[in-house]
Image 1: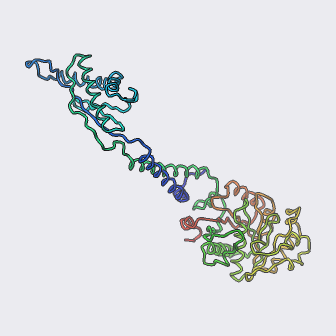
Image 2: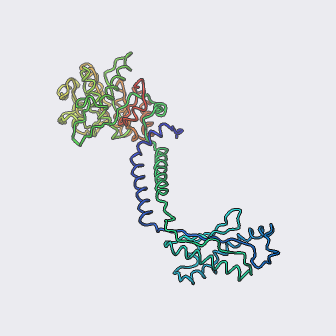
Image 3: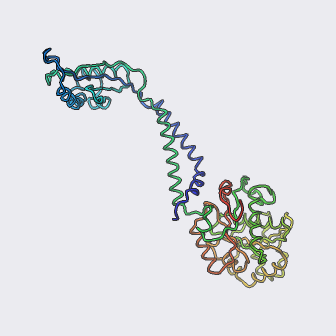
Length: 451
C-alpha cells in the first residue's frame, strides 16, 4: 500500500465523527453510572508513628546522636513490612472483631515512610469511615506493642491518631470520565486508521489520478436528495440547482473541453463492478447534454441487467436486443422519446442468450454508424467490465469511454483490472468519474481548475 496521506486520512476520519461521538457518550455515561452507582465508596483515614530515641536512656545519655538517626531510618523499611505482617493484621481483626481475612485487610492498608523523616504513615481505606479510623489506630497500637515486646525497643510511638474522614477517598468520577472520553476517541481513531490502511477501495483525493493511473474526468457528489425506490433519478431535470446536478454539468463541460481538437458523438459509460452508479451517471449526463441543446440518444447496452427503462418509466417490449436482429435502418421504431426535450432512449429489450455476440456483431457497428448520422450525442450505458466482456467490446466502437467508480466502494484492484482490459484494446478512455463523493470531500480536493 502507498504511504499514508495524513490530509487524506484526516478527511477520511470525518466519516467516523458520529461513531466517535456515540462511543464517547456511551463510555462517559457508563463510567459515570459505574462510579456513582456501582463502585464501592471508600473512606481514608491514617495515623502516623514516629521512631523516637529509647525512653529508657538515662538523662545523661538522652542525647540523639547521628548514629541513632541513621539506625532509625534503616529500621523504617523493616517496620513498614512489620505493620502489614499477618501477625499484626490478625491481631487487629481479632480485637475489632472484623469479618475479614488478613490478606484482604492487607490490600486496604498502605504504609509509607515520609521522606527525610523518621515517621511512618499508616493509611487505611474502608467502606466505613469510622471503621477505617479504628483499624488504623488498632494496627498502630499493636505494631508499637509488637516492637516493644519483640525487639525490646521503646522507639516507636504513635504521633497522630486516626480520625474518621467522611470525604470519599475514591471519588474519581471526573477523572475517570475524562479518561473514558480519551480512550473512546483514541479507540475510534485507531479503528478508523486500521480500516483506512487496509481499505483497498478507491477514495477521492488529490493523489487519486496517479494512484489509479487514469485521468480524472470529473466527480459526482453524493446526492443530498433522499430518493425512495421508484423515485425519479433524473436529478439534473428535476433538481437542476442541486449539488449533484451541478457536478454532472461540470462533467459535461469537462468532456466538451477535452474534445476541442476532435469531435466525438459516442460515449460509453461503464464501471468495474455493479452498484457503482454508472446508469445514474449515464442518464443524468445524457439529460445534461440534452438541456444544452444537443439531440441525444441514450442506449442501454447492459443487455443482462439494464434498467434505463425503469429510470425513464418506458416500456421494454422493444429494445436493443431485438434491434440487433434486424436491419439498422429500422432503428426509428426502437427509439422512444422521453419527457425530457431532445432526449430519446433505446431500452435493452429481452435478455438474449448471446449478449456479447450481439454487441460484437457487424449489425451493431452498422447501427452505431447509422445513429451517429442522426444524433448529436449517443451515450451507451454499458455493463460492468469485470463481470462480462460486453463493455470491452463496446469500447472498440465508442469514441470516448468513461469509467465510473464509487467513492469508498470500488476496490482498487477491480479498477486496475478494468484499466488493463481497456488498455489491451487501446480503448479511448476519457477518464474516471468518481461517483457519490461526499460534498465536504469534494470541496476539500479539486481537479482541473474546479476550485
